Length: 347
Image (cartoon, rainbow, N blue to C red):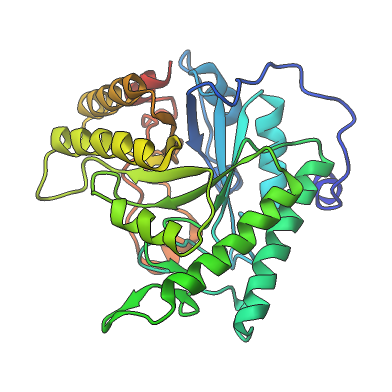
């Protein structure tokens, strides 16, 4: 019944009692989009005292003030679709957690290696794709609005370094830059931006790419010159994944580029994703704590979201099992299902 209520975009009977952080306050958040699939698989979560409780409650208890949720158009596995996202958004609201909505514009993960057109949009012309982006964005956000949930941040596309909705909005291929690539990509992006602003004029709209440690000025310069609209820059940062650089250098470079991008483009930068290797919990805690300390000092960073910290015990989503992939190795819960030391950085 609850799922049906949310799908119909009904308004809540009562308002949450917990106080929300100001949108101007440093965001300390987590993307826990896998949570409903984990719960379906029987995964339990425990707070720092060992008491079994809701993962959203744990996030609030350990110092989080925000939640990020991804949206897929028509996911094969039935999760991270509209109904699932609305349910999770309500749970975040009930804990007084600010919300970021992350539109992938795909039926599964969109990232630098894949930006697949949703199956339902496969035969669309470019103009129809643009309309589909706007309609999908408006649909999700209108439902949130009718539920009295206002996302503080709205992310248009996920890690769109090489554009979105390939091949229509792709920037380059093996032969080099694609003619009109930036124009086509920003046209699709702006369709989402405009739709988001139409529903929530005050929400902060983010354009998001990977590799915070790189000098990405060229990318944002091209994006802006092509007419791309954004209120905030979003970056991903995984400091222990570069075989040629240690985590100290990765953190240093990320902080340096967060500062330079913020100053050049006149906006704050959000670390939309971060993750640390949990094979050494003490080191993971050090890596994350030192990074957060540094980015808070810059005053140019709007906040940081840990990507799927609640993963533990070699749990894998159904899609990973189907593909034969290993379990995600940067979750931040212990084998006992409690927050690991790395999450102390959010206190």
